[in-house]
Image (cartoon, rainbow, N blue to C red; front, side, top):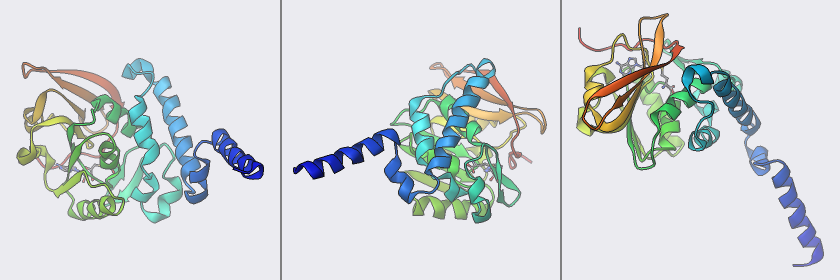
Length: 247
Ligand code: SAH
């Protein structure tokens, strides 16, 4: 290599070293806000460590959140707020959860690369995309048909081939695809739907907000190898209600 080229290559390397992801910034106007979102998540994780029991998130989870283009999952007029740490309306009276809660719930599920995961409450499809970065296969159910349709299309356009979407009532789980290594419910349930615990593999985890509106608590259920579940409370949360179920 001639010396001038070598210098240019070196300089290029240096720029990249000083600004990690520098090349990506040029094409993705949201690369910097996404980095800021991650910094916010890291800070809130530290601030809530006494309640949640975790001072930091797994590196796999932060890497997944760094990858998924959250701005593609919100209505165009809210795109510029996509990386703020707050929930946003996604139409049909529903919301996309705050990024910190997405990160925390994902972390609590402790997904391994070969896992098959069920999500109840597809909404925008954002949480499903984060799960898809971590698991082998994601099955996600949404009860509101237009949201399910939109999320399916969006995940397809973004190239998430390991997500299967379905319109239906997730209160009953997804019996045809059960059992799952992990199940996440992203709507507030009055009580834990029994089918979800049944469809969990021994050793699997269910992450679910439970309780009446205004007093929901994020819960983790661990299903032991003997099939018995133990539960623990993580954090007070606010979710749109889980509808469906027995009438
Ligand atoms: N995970 C979503 C946000 C979920 S908002 C995201 O990343 O954008 C909660 C969603 O749960 C709403 O879209 C709501 O329609 C859906 N939902 C409520 N009850 C449900 C049920 N019984 N089965 C499936 N989806 C349900």
